[in-house]
Length: 177
Image 1 (spheres, helix red, strand yellow):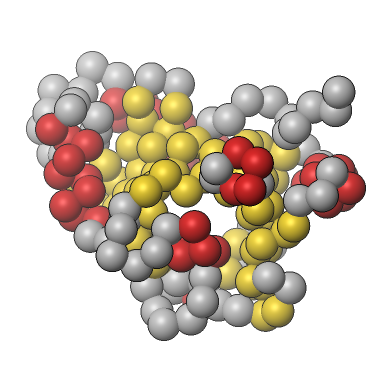
Image 2 (spheres, rainbow, N blue to C red; image 1 turned 180 degrees about the vertical axis):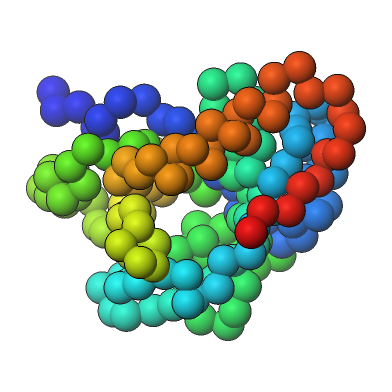
């Protein structure tokens, strides 16, 4: 049997309607601190949604829970987007698992050959990491994100993880960028 994606899932993501309220819920169970970032369409290049050019904009908060990064996503803007495909507006729900990819094109081709549809693609502006969301929801109940490895993004993720080690509950909400 073909391996689903390289490596193990390193991130679990939820789509939320109210980012601050969602973060507060996670903080109550001891996950934190959370790092907030707002992504506007200008921060991405070559973004597609279901095969057509489409901007991506969202607010996110990142934290670490053991070996798993937690990403909370509040979509912004009026355009159709990958996040509302499986999580309708007005609800909060699990959305995707994310995997690092050493060869995103090969992994996308493998998943497409298995009958999955590419739901969204893009690149961080300035030649940054490439990402793809594959619609695995009919079989797995969630999307799958593939993310090309980038030292910059890995550095950010490592900083988030390091902040969670022996976190004492102080400064629970932190801004990035």
